[in-house]
Image (cartoon, rainbow, N blue to C red; front, side, top):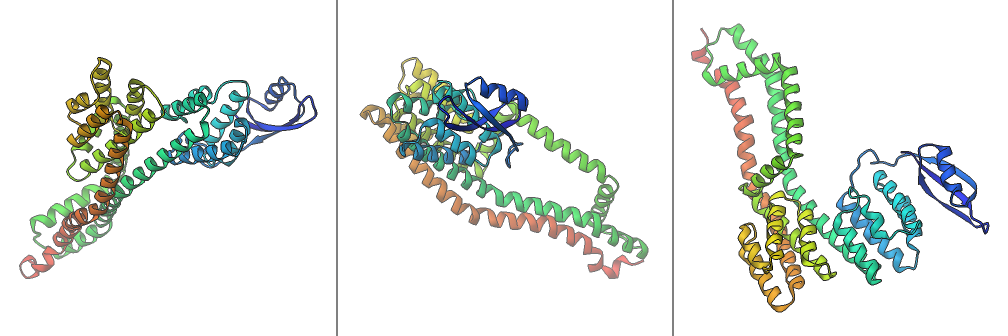
Length: 398
């Protein structure tokens, strides 16, 4: 639905402006005039960069929460603050959502109620924290806490992505180099050897046959690769597929511990901020499960929530899941016994965030030799097989 920017005069003659979604220019004009405004001037807004993708990143949420908190502290009314945020946000989808939230707040709804209507843009955690802030009268302070939380989560996510990006890029480059050799280089050598009437060694024959198969079926290989990628994404979109993939990632030899530490840091930080804000433990655990970022961890949290709902302390159920390390369980137990659970969770989060930092720094030294061996085995093996007949020139020429 198009978004229109408008200016109009109210009953006192004061100039007002804003944005509105409508099916057409005339529909937008009717909506604005129904509010008692006159001299309506409308302009259709073009989608901002990123507007095609209906996704709000953790970084978008961090910037939104931080800037919103600053404007509330400066005494700017919520409606006006939302209008400013909609104009400044570079994410087109997020900008249109903020505009709709502003319109709903303008009609009398609370900020939390308005945000709750757009779950794709505003996570449950942010909605709940906004509700707490509005109820307590400390919205700016609550938004500052949320901004800090999302900044830390964004930083954590960036480190994990950076750690995984290096081997992915090396693997893709290795595949491209191998494909280039098979498609462009190997056929030339195959013709030379054929003209020479050479008796080729086994590795060279396998390489030439692989090249022949790839060159003559390049279209089907390309289509098959695309189909596999699409199928993989479809499988990940299902609960069973996501559960299998997340379980595999947690068990992976190199990246498994890193992902687990990141998930535990996210769990601890999320639960800590919710409990600090006074959210009941059962509701806090449910929200935390949605924000965990890992299906296996989320399922374990929900299992623990069921046991807590039966009257158990949280430490025991967490231990029973087998997902959380003894250190986490021990500190949670200490926090419950001393009445400082949120503080202990905050310490757990800080500890595991530091563990992620150390793991990311040490990952390069661990994975670099593995990648060198991988590249050497694939590319080097192909080159050796390609030149093997030349090395044995004396015995290969008839």
